Every structure is written in C-alpha cells, then in structure tokens.
Length: 303
Image 1 (tube, rainbow, N blue to C red):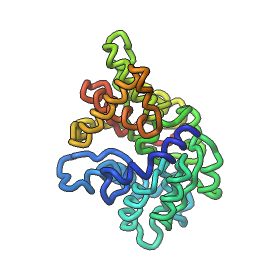
Image 2: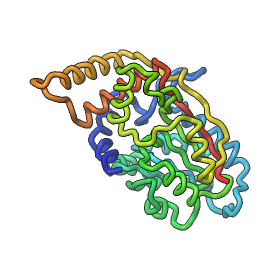
Image 3: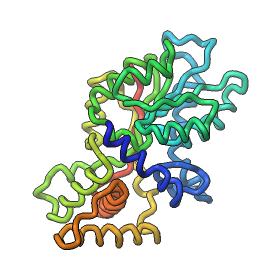
Image 4: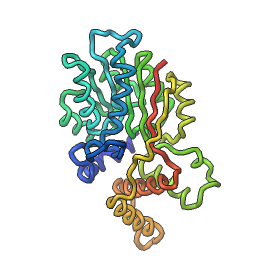
C-alpha cells in the first residue's frame, strides 16, 4: 500500500486546510435528518457506528473468550489523523467513565500517524498495512478486538480477502465490523451499458483515489461470509451526501482543465497526487449523480 501512503503523505495537510472545519475528519459530511451544523454532518457516520457498538458489543459485554476485567478494544482501520477515534472516544467515556473502551488506530501514512498521535495523545496509533499482522500485534499486545471499523479506507485495501482474514484473526467471536465507503452499484460492472465518458470517469476515480477494492454490496457480503463474518445489514446513505457545493463546482472546473491538458501534448499532462485527488473526486461526484456509485455503511458480526 506504499502508493496509498504516499498519496496521503502528500495530500493530508491540504485535506485538513480546505473544508474540514474543526473536525479534522477526512471523510464525507452527511446531511442526515436532524443535522444542524457542519460539525454534526462530519460525524453522522460515527454516530451510526456508535449506535451499533452500544447495541451489539458494549451494552451486552458478552463476547466469548473476552476478559471482562479489561476494557474492550475498538480499532479504526485507516484512522487518518484520528478524528473519528477522538470523537468516538469522547462519546464512549459515557459507557464506563473508569474503564471506557480503548480506541486504537492503523494508518498507511506516516504523516497521518504523527498527526493522530499529536491530536489524540491518549490512543495508540501505528503506521502500517492493515492487511498485515504486524500493526495488529503492535497495538493489541496479546489481546483481541471487540470491534473494528473502516471509514473510507476499505477501497484502499489491496487484497480484501487478506484484510478480512486479518481482522477475523484478531477479533473475538461476536465482535462487530463496520465498513463505510463509496460502493459501486451493480450496473457499473456492465461496461457496455455505460457511455464512453462514464467508463472514463470510473477509471479516473479509481486511479485518482487509489481504489484497489471495487466491489458491489452483494460481493462484499459474499466475501465476508467466506472469511469469518456474518452480514447484518448495509445502509445506503447516498441521499445524505451533498453534491454540487460551490467548492465542488470549482473542483469540476479544475478537473476539466486537467482533462483538456491531457488531450493537448503542448500543455502536458497534469499528474501529481494533488491533481489525482482533484480529478478522482470530481469523477466520483459525476458517477454519484448518475447513480453508478453509492455511499454505503455495512455491518458484520464475527462468527
């Protein structure tokens, strides 16, 4: 995942500078019912995950084999700069003020790991590949996970089978796994049903945002069943995604300039992590407007 790490090493600080407000969240803001502020919008996904954590893991506290005298451990796989860990950690203190659940994180970016350790000093964060055993061993120190979540990091996994196997190997039976990401709808896998422009948008999104795992919901659920997890449900949150904000329209103009440059040899191609991010983000929005991509949140139980 070295290319993904390099991408976030190059782009993280600009992500934080533009449009994330005080949340430091590097994921989507969702205008869910009842959301009043941008801060709330950036934490809709965490609130949905928190609801499942409390219902299925924390309130029951009966995962087979878990030592109940120690706090349950919850992993943020692809934790970025720790924004979700910080938010969930604050909310989870209310579960048990003396021994709240412990949040740990893995990110492929050394820059992000450093920023996360600075901003969330009471949690353990390591830089590494979450499809390998090493970062889990470093964080868990002989214990096991009660839950794990991936917010917009599932698509970066170079090997979804290995990822699920690693999580399953380090999680108690009955543990909760949540995956939230941009998920392709089934029609996108019929290239002849797409226009040439739509096929180019798919390629541009995957290249620009370093998408390695690209599976529709039925395929994700089948893969989960085969590798240690029972699907619970998948929620389509697409209607809460805000499209065509003023910033998005500026991104579209920049992306079109880059596309024109690609076709003009005298100008030269616009290729850099920054330009890849611009073009990939615009391609995703256009695919969403065509209902070729969805924003989904899926929950699974470790069997």
